[in-house]
Image (cartoon, rainbow, N blue to C red; front, top):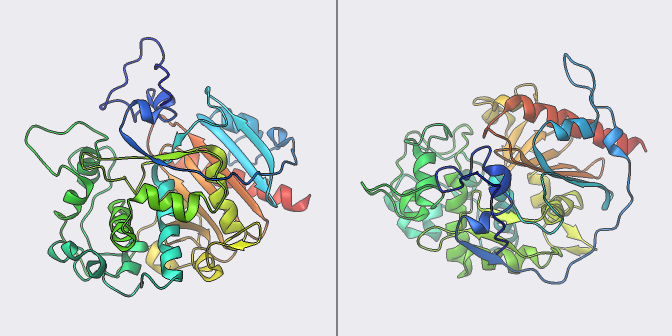
Length: 391
């Protein structure tokens, strides 16, 4: 446990830890705030370096002068930024006291790691996207997930009622925070674990309709993976992905009162190890010539049903006509295969396979959602990838 104290005079508890300004400290010290379970690493695969002076790169933004990358990061409460090009680190910077071996909360970037585990099991024939999730977890037959297929849950196209308003503690995402142990439990009861909450959810529309973002879908995937493998999610991630992709540091998941890992956002890892997932997808599912993930799965994560996504557009993507959501990845441009793992408060793994570029950003924004910041980051990533490809 890292255990560094929070800044003098700043109170950090379950009510405040994930909000600004406390998150400037707590996102880098989650093990000092919440119970966690370790994701063991194996032998690290080094990332070669070929440094570029990208801090001075001008970034064209709308209605204002073009700042440099360094200026943009300084103004966006960044904690770390790493750029890979052709498998080499060309830019790596840390801010706000963060270091290369410090773990940082991923928020919903974790979803893409869990989706990757599903892809591994589908490739081996252990999971079938057309089967109902209740086939793997029979308890789900008694809640809103009855008859929802694994593929529908993976693409967040079930018909389950789940509100994701981060400012409303009474909606379902607020209940998830309490069930996961991220917020204090209430005296009047409520689900005591994430899986208990899943079993209370109801269906509000037919499964298989338009996309609607629901974090709880990833926890259902985690439950399916645990039942199929007989392992907890932290142990499964270590065995199937963390060790094979050559992660250099132990990671961890936050756990609820029942010891269940929070699949939808509880992963904590180093900046470089987050980047390694992007490199895996940039390299068609291979690391150092070893095929870890099938190229077919990687391809499916780069495109999807644009029409189903556009029916409920994300504010940060209103100007991205080819955007969609596929297999726990945000597809920013399905024509070019640009996709990203995204988390609230400014977490991101951006993958541009054609330009062989991966950009990883860890942040502690004061607010959970900021569409203007997100759009600025997308434009910056496009500029960085274009600059590197031209070079």
